[in-house]
Image (tube, rainbow, N blue to C red):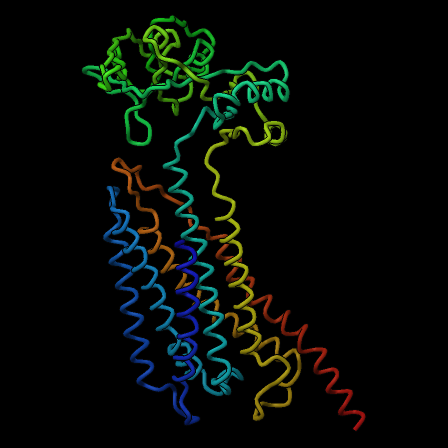
Amino acid sequence: MALEILTYLFAGSGLGSMVLAARSVPSAPGALVRRRPLAWGSALLVGGCAVMALAAWSTHEDVHYDDFGSAMTLLAAIAGGALVLLGLGPFLALLLGVAGRRSVLARDRARSVPAIVATMSATALAVTVVIVAAAATSQNRAGYRPEARPGALLVHGFSAADAPAALAAVRRELPGVPVVETYRGIRPYSLHADGADLPERYGAVTSGVIGDGALLRYLTGDPSTPYEENTAVVVTPGDAEVASVTIEHNLLGQDGDTAPVVKQVPAVVVRPSDPSVEEVFLPVKVFRDLGQDLRPDALIVDPSVHSTSETEQRRLDRSLGGVAQTYVERGYRPPSDWRIAVVAVVVAAVVVALAGALVAAGGADAPSDAPSDARSWQAAARRAALAAAIGTAVGVAAGCLAGLLIAWPATTSSAWEPPPRAGFATPWPWIAALAAGLPVLAPVLTAAVAAPVLTVRARRSARR
């Protein structure tokens, strides 16, 4: 959602900046720029920078942020970046006015300035998007909590009736591979330990996982872990002292009242081989002694035994036929639709930037007062290179400013115990490639367009 808002606001401000830049071009040939649009541009530029700086400062701490408040702060920061782009238009008109008649672009500012502003705005959008995307990806990776051990296959989401079919599909597609089964109780229960902190998941104390010795060995990553049917195991990489855990659930009586059932279970603490594993293992026998009916909850393939490939996962998905879902823990991966959207925005911005440089160069045309040597396709290519260089340089500067400031409100967390703000590597190679590539691609594109047109015109003139 933030990407769409950023794209729309920056695109809208780019159009507004083109209009403001066009109104900044004076009608008098010797004048530099109109004062009123320049004053408006200065105010918008300063105001936009102030808004982005304030948004970044207000979200620089690693604390809990309210969802609505952080969203509004991010929106304000994006709007500040849009104001910066809007205010830069008149300054590009001033820049070409200072260049005077030494440049063909300056001789026809009414056409070249809005086009260069389009290149500048598109470049700024592309740079801002790649910086914010890099920051958000790094923060999401830092706050990622694995669903299973790295490389483990998890089959879940099946009903009790479909559990045998799911188990048969796994054994059919992965013959000879041991399958770990987990269970869940029909009635809800709570789990706590007096005088000790149990592991948490998603901000709440875990309710534990129910299974047999195979599940315990999967959690610890140690095949030699001893298994006792009447002992719970707290699996955590931290220092913990837990002598027992208490399981409490309610039984519905005949009169409609609930009778609490409490059972204290001896417990031991085991440190897992994978530090990301934090869980409480509860033996199946403990719940059956409580009269709890258990149902299959999930199937797991231990990565210590078998590493599931993507091909095997796809084949298993087809075999399951939709009765269950599969998941293989491969670490944090940005959502595919997010990556596609970022690439689409950057590609579209590059196309607009090149188009702006082409229009600024005039394609196969040149101003009527231009020298004759300015009417060749080589001259058009030079004008395109200059227009792209000016728009790209200003756009990269504006995009870096906006991206680095917007990255702060874009990486806030609404968790009560938020992860530390992750440092991220600014994608300078991509930014450098954009800054160097556009001034190179623009003249090539202009030459490809202008050369055939000028050749046809020359042949027509020769016939006359």
